[in-house]
Length: 297
Image (cartoon, rainbow, N blue to C red; front, side):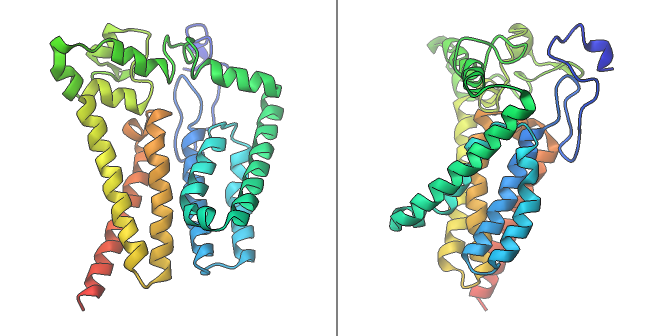
């Protein structure tokens, strides 16, 4: 099927594509970014348990070596953004209270970033200047992402330009679920069909704005904030180091999930990635329930 679509989709180069736990797109590649995010979340749990002295340095190094090796092979540039978000969120108190720790952390983070970028440039045969220009080009300039007219920045300004006081309901509550989603095999929503080729549902944020309006954004942020607060209560009040460690890791995970809708739409559309999000929320709810039961014993 992919071979037959090569002429229709100019960007469709490989005939086959690696599709693991997170699947792949028929007209794109494997979901490497989702895999990378999952690995970084797992690494956050390891680091957090190391912080609470549940894991030894040896255990952390060996497990991390196996866990993080796919990050430098997945050709996923977003790693250089997601990794610092996770690290800063997990070690935010240490970075503020111990400046020398912050310097060491920045050096290690910069080293990891340099290694990742170098491997990516080797795999893609691109120079650093090309990599930077290419990334800025289809994220911030007036150039579309892939075969789309819009990119991750212009998809938001495009939505803003098409809002008006005369249609305040659309601004506040959107145009209905599925209206901005475009799928070559499943059909398009009426908003996506109206702006055919623009990819108005390119990111999770743009989907929420078109389908649920500002209310949808507030609702998502409210969920993330509630999860953060629940995890924070466990960090402060729990006497179990494992609970504190995992709650801190969940906070880092929530920071990544909050950023992710700006990058891709998979948190709203891909079940394997949603499953990780749901699992983390369920695990936090279970830990909170256990904590409350022990508190009332």
